[in-house]
Image (cartoon, rainbow over all chains, first blue to last red; front, side, top):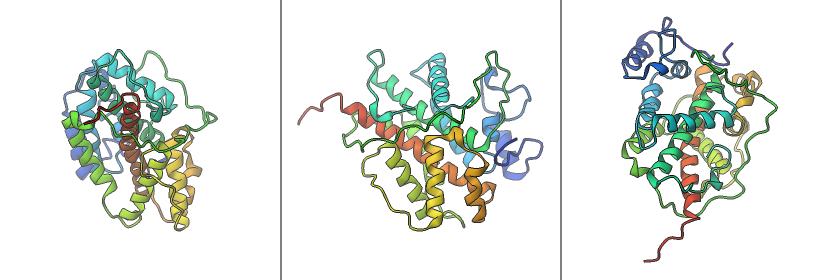
Length: 89
Length: 199
């Protein structure tokens, strides 16, 4: 059970739905697409503020979608950051 | 970067550009980790190796022992796209008024994060009222022990009329400030190890 409201794709309307649709159209490696076919859970975790979502994930594109670190090296940084933050994500 | 950005050293195997990338990426992922915890979003990926569950008894991250006062040698400006997008994000999260979070309230959260992470200029500010104290408690938990976020953490703010969106907003102020502060502190810490050439 979530601590704060998460508005999933099916329940989304208006600006949030439009934002979700734009996020789904982003080019992403298949490994980053969750099996449910909707926006990734970490995007949905931001659903209470649709305006924030593109700002946060545009920043992500400049870091997770760019060098000089390679994709595997970026994943190492992300995974270790998550482990030290005690976070599964 | 995650545990003590003020102690960051330059790994010999990394170039300046690679190190800057790692610093920014780690700081950014700290935001995602904290939002995942703040909301308690479920894992929605099929994974080969199940991640360990968060252990609430893990103690909080340390508070920076002192502000870092060195001038950074590296700058996020060397990654102009990241710097530009982060500026758009921070302007939105930190520089607006909402009914429950004024710019001044947001600025006080930022100052607290800077104090915790070790940004220069950050001095301890006394709480101005009970809401300020509640926001500071939330900020401390989000910044230092996001794995301990739970319903009880939010209860004082709910009692003051904060709904889920307003609580999320307050968390975002702290996480966003954390991204900026960790980058600033880490880059300043790196500069301590490389003496600047005098002009």
